[in-house]
Image (tube, rainbow, N blue to C red; front, side):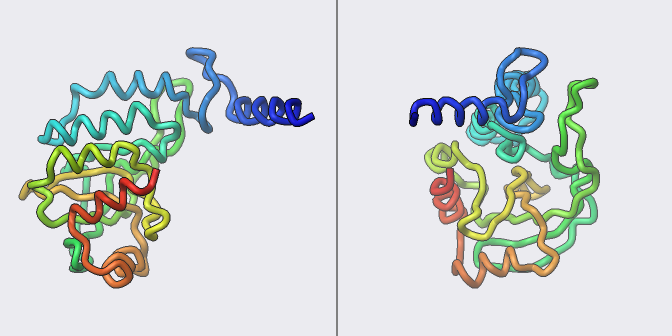
Length: 203
């Protein structure tokens, strides 16, 4: 029957990633227990700040609601990047390429109860014009940020701030430059407000 099929599908989906060893809840994806990861991330809130209370709150909300590590936006201090080089100038801001020294989360280590990271990873740093002046209203609109697949942006690792207090998205880097070229030429000129509106539209 349809009911039996629905029950079977539910059991398959909930058992797909196994049980968390800590809380006995179903994991929401491979190596990710939403409850335990939310608790772990929340315990670190006092150890970092973006320098903007509203932005801190936004990142924290995204983190505790993440259902997999790809959803978990990070605050990445500027000194965690190496070899920052100019890559291009677009209507939405300046694009740099750099190496994120520790790299993004890769897999959860059950034994040490911590994330193993990818190591030095080349990323695109997209500084957004007028980002010093973004408002709480716009930050509140991106609480459900995940990806910008529909706009050609494959992955947003987190947010950073440079020595001039300019905020920027830390994105996956494309060797052929298609990412920022797409945003510049296909989407036209983008400002912080445009980016936020795009983020709000993807959940």
